Image (cartoon, rainbow, N blue to C red; front, side, top):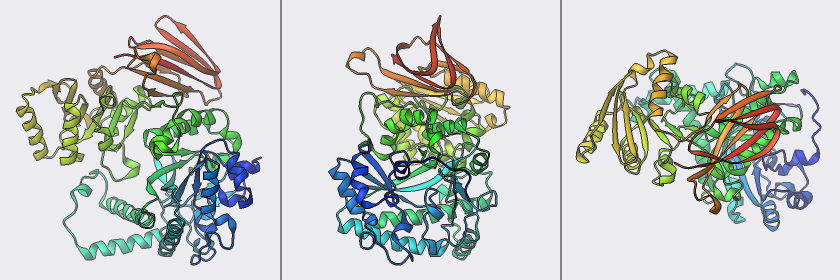
Length: 584
């Protein structure tokens, strides 16, 4: 089945975007010229399992087809002063035929949550059917392939980094993994899992698992545990056979592969507005957005600009490590994050559930657009770098605080960090340890009675706020927003208020000052995008801590300065970025 033709040239088939290289799409005799002529010094190479085997038992890495020789590919890249990064899917991959399974294993179709076979529209208009990774035969064959591939890497002393990737898409501000599957294979494997659980009759459930959202049913908890366990089997397989090259797991969201994208592509309707928001959502969830499944015409304009400004310039260096992308003064801007919402919820699609329930997520979304991260690693959040702690607030659900989190919270607090803890569900022993710490250090807790009981402890620049979220859950949405507005206002965050018409997306990034900017504590850049087909207007209210430095790339837009504010008028597909020097 095919929807429409896409005028994609040969080079776009081999390099579909995002620095990805499809080695199986061209002759190995052309690799040298193709790679040498590519503008980026970093190239992502996804491994195509099906390309290396016909029967799932025998594997070719250079004998029959020269295009399977990954060592040759690495050598050519090194000679051209390029660095390769290999991606190995642990889930169905929407950019590979059948999701990446060898043809002989493509037996049981994957079923979506809507109850239909999972299919993905490709950039060229063809429809790609996805097959289940829950078939036991698939996992057995997957281990055989990874063993052979790992042996090839080891024997050839390949040094390129290798990442496991989980593939998915964004729908209704949720990451939906292609590992999610409601097929016969998934059902049968889950039934075997339940039988094993019943036979084990283990009543000593791990405390981490019991600390899940109470509204979830027992079946949902078991489903989550099952999916997590199966997914972990694939990850552990890669770790086992690539002990040197393996770097970790990353999630990738492929724009244009959502369930409803098929319908819109059939109507030939553009969805730049949705894709624009999906990109920004990915940045808040530590997910890599990818445009390789979008037709070439949709990759131009706003989407191309966002990838250049927000993803390729610095974001990938954060996710894949600093060595992945070169950092220069111009591209050293990093996403600005004022808020970290930590939650140890194992259900991927419900990571923000608790924060939605008490109104915090909605408040941040309306007032600090995309300047927050959800479920961020507490070890990263607890770094003692004072510049990292400045102008940031960390939120913890009491359910998720154990000894490790307790010590990290205290370290942040003593080094000037600002932490907010929901304490109605805090373990009593942990609560006593907090109280003992305050007494030992002569810290007086200020008690405030507003919508709920709040206690605040201060130590230098550090602030530790406890609140009871029980009453907050029962409030209407307006009162929840007011509650958080009062709480956040007490922290005196350095920020510019933006009044944006619906449809305009924006995001802040930050960097350290250069030599000629030392009078500032930091330099911030705000990017604006109008992915709509309408004229739009945005107003920036001046803040006393901000000094305008420069306006960059006014594309289909115009910035005008008025008393106490700047006004930006956008034409359709307009964009602009503005730099500010910030002092505290």
